[in-house]
Image (cartoon, rainbow, N blue to C red; front, side):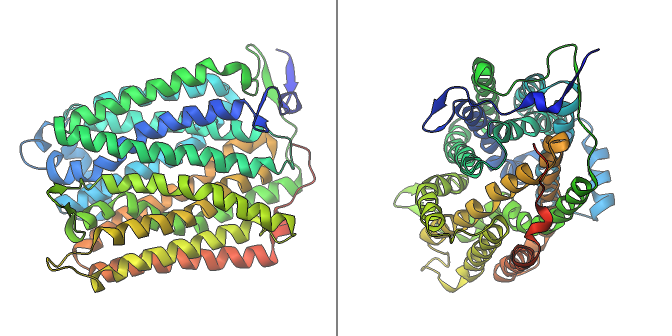
Length: 458
């Protein structure tokens, strides 16, 4: 077998659209439909488990569930039905974000990007359709977890591969890519919430499977505009990591538990937050009752609205030499998100005549918290994409998702505190954890940024 070096995968400018490679549109469009399928299911999952699947008459039908429950409770202690729902959700989301490490390795070393993305999309499609039946719930979870790892572990790295090293457009590209994630997150809960209300949970889950198939078709039709995968029959040989690159890898891995502090709170917004909305927010608007999951759509719409003015603000700062570095932006995101979570803690201070918090209180939370999300999440991804050595770039980007695994798993366990703590204390605890992460990242940004710089060509 003839060997090729990693330099053969140099960024390809190719055709342009709005000053960016056309491949960005293909990848963002694929991710849009991936997120329509994923967030459509995710928005329903905790409520579905707590209000139907784990109740008598349904739970007995789930193949393998007694052994599964015994394993979960063996790890986390006895759980109520609601506590079990939040813990299963936390584990599911956690593993969805940890498997990109494996998916990135498959794309880097074994199958190549296109084959691995295709495999992931097909697995996720099968998983969504399995969600349409009580019996195959655990199989559905497994297929969705494995599929997400293969797909996402190779979509995001291709965004970075579209640009030369040091190209400032890379951070903007990840912001634009993230806007598609949030557009999908906006559309999905509206559709699946309406389908679930009108036709039942399972029809809504089946829609998510159709969405994933659409994403796969977009990806396959746009192959000519994407970075080339290694040719069939060839293996990729990358030069060994230099001592400096190995140190950078270790430093990037050390960031994972720090960024996990953000994801503990963010994961709770996908998880126990739905139960909190059900219990505390006034959802009655005239004669219409707003579905709980519709508020999740604001978690997608808010960043999509905030992105253009934020990019204009960053450009204004850059023109004056005052744009913050990556670590400072990440810290700012943590502080904004912590303040927003404190807003939830203060919700009990503003009650209507029915003893519930006005709906606009939750709307304001989504607008503010997602500004923090925009500062934090795409910047973390861009940091790993820039700093990780090329030979392990996709693998390191995938490993950055270990932060979501840690945060989601911890948030799932902390979800049980919702049944014992006052809601104000529950959210204040999460705000404190996010703020701690911000303080640590700010210190790194002010004192140790150069430790993440490398002169090696990528």
